[in-house]
Length: 79
Image (cartoon, rainbow, N blue to C red; front, top):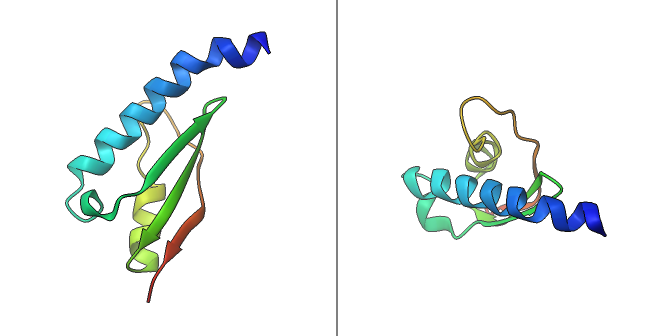
C-alpha cells in the first residue's frame, strides 16, 4: 500500500502529461479519450474513428525523454 501511495503523484503527473498531449493533437483532441495511470502504466479508453487514430494515441509519451507503455486495449476504433 505504501508503494501505491508513493506512486500516486507520479501517476497523476503522467496522466496530466498524456492528457496535455492529447489536447494538443488536432486529430485526437475532440475524441474524449480517458487516460488512467497506475504505477506508471497508462491505459487509454474511449472510441476513436479508426485504427490509425488508435495507434496515434498509443504513440504519445508523456515527454520526449520517457518511453511510455500505452495500452490501447480499451481504445476502440469505430468504423
